[in-house]
Length: 321
Ligand code: IVH
Image 1 (tube, rainbow, N blue to C red):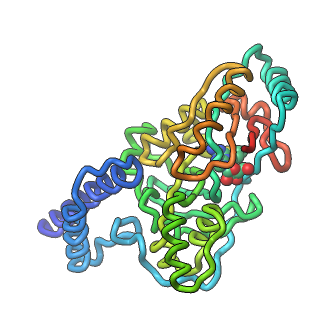
Image 2: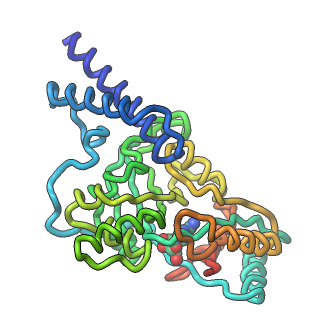
């Protein structure tokens, strides 16, 4: 038994190290080891797991492409609907939105968070005790499709939140996060070149390609496509409830999720509109597609005060490019 305990520790340490290198590579674009060394670690883990199959868990880095293809997507019902965003089309609409927010929150100047609106498809990921257990598409908002196996194939999706206890202060029973899966422009070009060679129809844009690649019954096809993801929110619960949109983004990052670097906060609608303008000019330089900017009320408390309508939150709007 002593030997087996020793092996369990070795397996756990290997997983932590692999997760760390994986995160540096996929989340921070900052590789800390060579491909060869990374492969050696993976092979070591695979060997130990093959010799001691009782140590394999669904959250091991060796299990990103495990299991058999699905016959159909299971439906997932959620308690907190995934909403869409209303549009802000003019200065007049911006001032109107700001006026409503100031009135509802009883403030002279509102703190806003401004983010890029990533052009991909929205996903929700659930972590139980720090383990990734379920992931879904938005679907109609309340009911989505179970794409857990597909999401596991993305390097930027953490299978375990190894730092959760330090970041949150305890291990929450449930943590639900949301984000946008997308494809980089260069990866679409490569994929379409390949498709043309194989006499397959090229995808018209990165959003269609990301959606067609992620929503596959055979997740082994998803694994072959290069997909990326930016996370933008933590669904507030009694357990975990960041005070602002910006602190939510910071917490996501500390937990090991990839977040978009072009996220900032400032006071007043003039600032927000100026920032939207700056982000618009940033667009061409991005390696991925953004179809607009999202302006959100930064304080979670104020977001709750403002509430939601049937389709849209009253505390966030999209400025489309
Ligand atoms: S917030 C309740 N933030 O845009 C707030 N959405 O039209 C709703 N999207 O389905 C989402 N980037 O897929 C938010 N930084 C971002 C976003 C973002 C892209 C997508 C998301 C959503 C759609 C809303």
